[in-house]
Length: 360
Image (cartoon, rainbow, N blue to C red):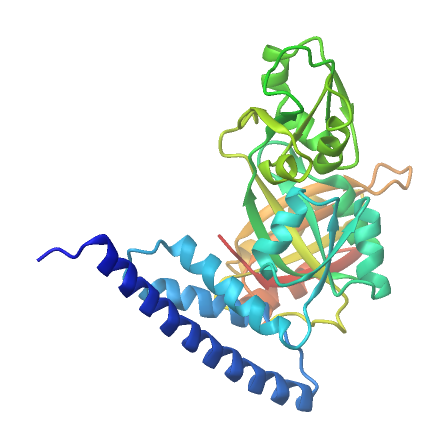
């Protein structure tokens, strides 16, 4: 016999109470783990351990919950448990409503202490000076390429990468009225303007495109003038009381941005192997024929896969370059360690930017 709505709601209420009891049991166990870690002097946050927990749960998930939902739920559970001791202080490009803030919450969960910053330089400064435990910065977009300022800052910073998160980015046109008519200025971060240039060329060819420090800042400014519009997230629109005049205006329907999680090594050392890891390095070589080819040979010889290769000018005036390379694996694996050692021996400059678990 089919159950009616009232019966189903009664069962759901009972399950919710069971879940609450179980979650509190988990929180109590997490507190005990935290006490042991404090006594040992070890870190509370272990991204590789959390990645293993989530991957393990996804592998045994019987449904109907989707794997992505499992990850979101357990990340929030672990975030809330960590916050019982002390929430992570996380710096990111502000103000409220940026994709950087969204990436921070997607990686750490929402139980964090928010430290919005006016630019990427301030994010790095906050994490270096100890104002923040961690920083979150965009490093690459699948349509516009690398975020050059982030790469330049990583080159000379004492911070290292301990995690990454890839965010599906939806850009919306936000303004005080729910119309495309009469827009004179469109405000957004330069990357967002570039990612939406096709749509803007077609629908708003005469509107001025004005670059600002962040998309959320563009939304904030759009709230001050009815002739202005911002390109930002729906959350930014809600934060500043704006209508979504046009949804998902990015030129690439699958627009994604990859964010790096950075911190000082004394806050969190290089995570242990999780089974799905990446090593990011930056190198330079002598300006001679075949030099770039030579640095790729060790990776091939040791069977290590390269997933990213980017160049940036060294600004030395000598047409020299730094090369940013991502490889699959973890330095604890002998073939990865051997490849990196051989690579380093060929370089005039060599720096490991970070070793970290890879996320989907």
